Amino acid sequence: MDKSGTPTFSDILKNIFFLLIIVQLAPPIIQSIVKQYKHFVEPRTKVGVLPITGVIYNSESYCKKLRKFFEAKDIKAILIKMECPGGASGTSQTIFNELNALKKENPKPVIVLVENICASGGYNIACACDYIIAPGSAIIGSIGATLPYLFNVKELLEQVKVKYTPIKAGTFKNATNPFVEMTPQETALLQGVADDAYDQFMLEVSQKRKLSLVSAKEWADGKIFTGRQAKKLGLIDELGCLENAIQALKKKAMFEGKIEWVYPPTKMSFWNLFSTDAGYDPESSMYTSLATKIGTYLGQRYAPKAIT
Image (cartoon, rainbow, N blue to C red; front, side, top):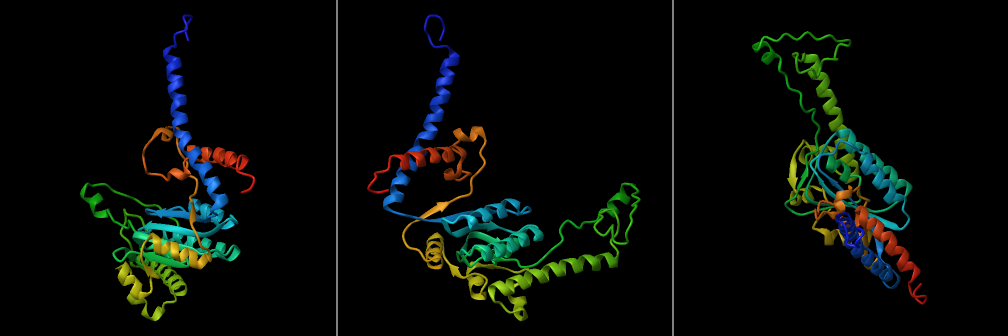
């Protein structure tokens, strides 16, 4: 305030800022307190939710979140929401192996729920899980391997009179060089790499889905299927939606009653506090996380003694 006691523009801005903070924090705090009271009178089973979306090229984040879910004793099962067209074979196989290892250390049922697509590397990951559910028109499969971006621009360089002189050490070092012609030996080498990756993929699917490798041309070979076709082939377990996944979780984790969905924490920027963008799960945002902690403390501190 100035000397006359009138609020300055700076004071008004500060008040508006703190008011916005309070408006954003109040609802989650209230919701969290209500949740705490509900937990005392109506216990809920916690289920971890991991969305796997888009093309995947890095396993670190997914493996870290899965490890936390498996190690958390209060989380009884895991739901993977799969919307993945594929990605790097090494990444998907790493997550596949991580799931197998975590399930041995801390056995918990893992259910995959597909809405639109679960293909290639995404399907590789799904195979490591206990149950796959998808709607009849979803895209499933694409069990195969490819080495993308192997193009050649040698003739284009010659047309514009650009001369390229490669220097290499190692017979096959230029196998993927787009500026030189690929030799038959190099082509055979790369084909062998793709074939071996494909064989590993098929073997993992065969073992996990209990499918015969003799009939692999029917369910593999890079083919894609609708959910209904995939169900007939044994690539998925059930046609359905979230409600089907809930029933499968209850059956495999052996619990009744309602579920408390637990999402991985989402990193939020400061300005996201005031955003109405629905591109993230509001239950895992930064301000909600803070509000939940406050609400949890208040709920436990002032919960009726007869209930606690």
